[in-house]
Image (tube, rainbow, N blue to C red; front, side, top):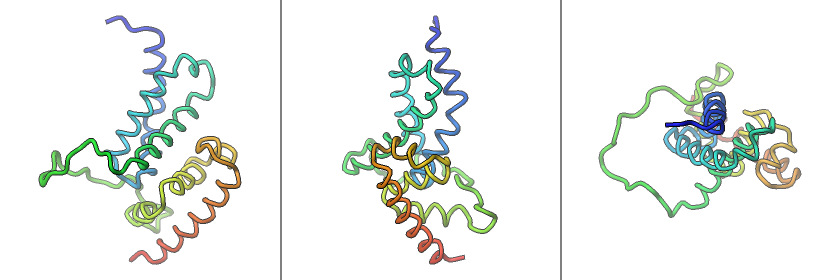
Length: 171
């Protein structure tokens, strides 16, 4: 099989960026690694289609991150549409370990994951983009396609909800 320069460049990009994109998706899905992998695959398919336009720019990573957020939000907008059918048996064993690990040596990842899961999807996206990925308000607004004031408002409300959930969480 002959690989094009485009394919090689894209493969190199995926090799460098996939772990960060998967971590972002795990945070967005509140620890659902399987859904996170689906979201990353969807996002990478979109990035591949756009690759001729974005490969020359330094913003390929930002484009991919926005594609992950968009794929996550698209997934949450269609709760009635499911690709899988629920069964009584698990297809494979559950993964061990925690997607989040310890936070500041005090809270376990399970408490953080549960608190994140209580947030609406867009609020969760704001928290992940602002505090996990350390994006500015402007970058977060651009990634979510909303106004800077909306980001500030959602961030404030989301932090308030997270604090309340984490304080109420059993130790």
